[in-house]
Length: 260
Image (cartoon, rainbow, N blue to C red; front, top):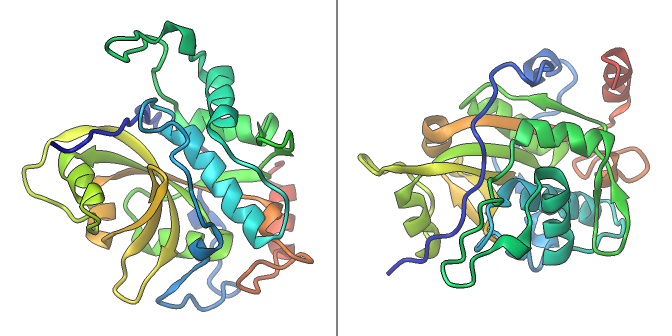
């Protein structure tokens, strides 16, 4: 029997994120995007971060994103279940003491709205296991199912938060070590938050979920994606330059212009 991991992404609120990536993707300043890219190998162990038992996927995803940025920028970052669950409790009201010891169910484990949590990450930030605070500078929404935007966002800003309406087949494929591909007729189990971080020569999208790096096809993304957010963080920069050599001076000017 296949183990069923927890989900936990709440439904989207249309229009909640007013800044759109498409408005800032200026073709004349974007470097050429190669078919294959990604720095996922910098993370030896992504860690489950309690998402096998608790619906904290959006919180775990934020820690995964920050771990990658800090690895790329050679900055300190410590990650563990306790830090993630503390943030989950602070933001959503999750109370682990209310977990039923027999069924494992918890009425306070209600999941997270990624759009609302993005604002929390900008204004309050998340605290890692070493006590270090990490904030994002801004966040922008991608057009639903737009693979070209997703690839550009991953290449320029390293990690993208991806929301999907997850089919049952994806859990089976994940645990079999297979690429996520659409399966006709597979029922939707619920909303799930994952991290987009890479691309390969077959146009597959490299993702992080349930403590592991895996792949999904572009067709899977187009079919099941319901929201995506790109986060602008200076933690992955070295001397003001991204791992791909992109200078973010223009981005900083844009951020000042939109008030973030």
